[in-house]
Image (cartoon, rainbow, N blue to C red):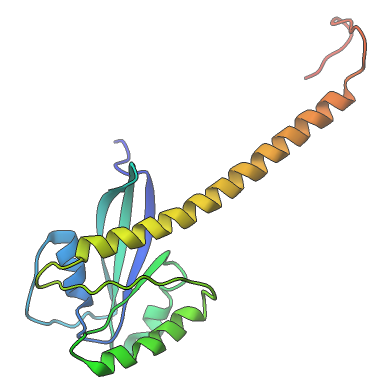
Length: 182
């Protein structure tokens, strides 16, 4: 069966318990909103494929538990994530203040990062698609820079190898029956 996507990225939702991480995930992946709150135990994930700049991107979105007792489990997922959503509830000042703790957790593994801000609502579907798409675009841009660097190094190495090969060939006419350039 043919692959249904061009690239796979892992995104992570982190924040305090009850801020709406699971609601954001369900709204984005299934276009559903559930007003009842059921705490995530450990980590859960869903997948969705979106198209960005003509590239089919499959995103795994990991939904982490916000309770303190699961912190050691969820921190293990930071290293494997290529993009992270910091989620807080605008009606809870406490959850907003805790964002700095979450940022410091993430910062332990990523020293430099830029952050976009999106106010979202899983209930009204405000900026859900836009925020997930924007983070996917940013991860894709970072991935492209990495691939371009690999391509540049590979082409320089190829050019150098061709130059070395040309320098080792004898000048003048070559009797093809006596010389092999295999």
